[in-house]
Image (cartoon, rainbow, N blue to C red; front, side, top):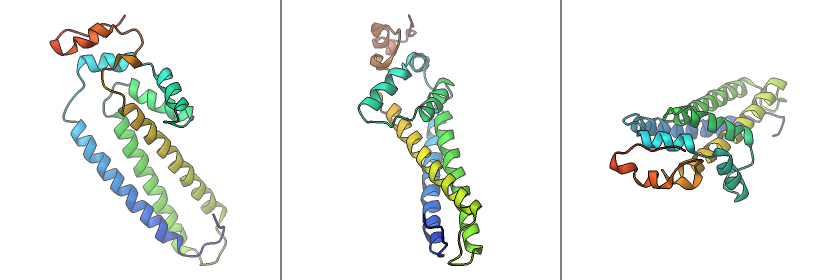
Length: 177
């Protein structure tokens, strides 16, 4: 976070932008796969019954996710929308936004005189990107944590009859109590 532009920063930012584009491509590929199907009624009922507060408490207590409730709430809102592509779409949008910000910074640094002090706007953009990277990392870690929950596991549900979950494959509808 040197306030002086050396000219070398653009190389690092271009490398970061390239990594982010690779991540965006992988996420878009994952989205294509997810878009070919839809969650079953039993899965939708299970998602509605998940106790997100308890999941958050357990994950933070065990050190599996950071204690950043704003990012957790953002994730939960997407999960509760029951759009099975919402989290993936958000991850893609976040990565693409970061990539655009980094490209803007690179363009800004390339026109700067080497050795000149960074402008207030450049410093602000750098801090914004740094914050966005941390927030993205936290959000992605939380999405991964939720993704690791065994599907249809009643342990994390509120008001679900475990016997009903066991019958989910025989065509009967999952009942919430």
